Length: 254
Image 1 (cartoon, rainbow, N blue to C red):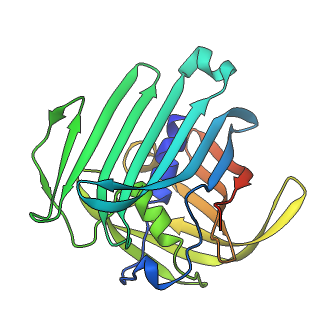
Image 2: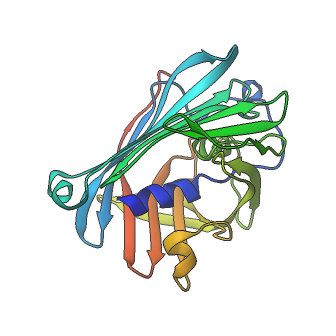
């Protein structure tokens, strides 16, 4: 479960170098959309994760989209390593940059309550954990938090061999996230075959088990349609493989 949070964070550290107002095109998602995934470690179901678009809010005077990711372990896994995580991300209504980022993390004995405030007048982000603040860091123009970056990426048509990049920050450092659109593929889940694009993020800025694992890899399949819905997530590291598979979709009102 802890690895899944790491995997999904790496995957959504992607975006596009060009600028595009969300108002200029039909969106692939709307408030009310909810995606649910089964999480498996080898053949064992380890938990469930959701990605959800909540109603538009005003944050610090800015109209913003509100995205939520949750992850929880199964009752069986709870006995060994209980996980209850939630990420809230807010992006301005034109989808140009992040406004606010929150992460409540409960993984075994590790508990964090992270808040990242974005000050675009100073081009700085300030990170705090349980109210304890770190020194602000400089932001690259148009920086996103990891979760907002994923939804921004869904605005664009994918093509084979496309190279994608966007500044991304978790409040502690700001990097240029990169991902490659490897190929158009077919993926089969629960007896249904989907047309999809296979994406692979660069792991250059990722530490932990990915840094220590030779030939570590993360693969993400997204639907090859206007929705660009994530269908399957797979990681390869020294301690084994982790898979997240889409099991249900609740579309927004559109």
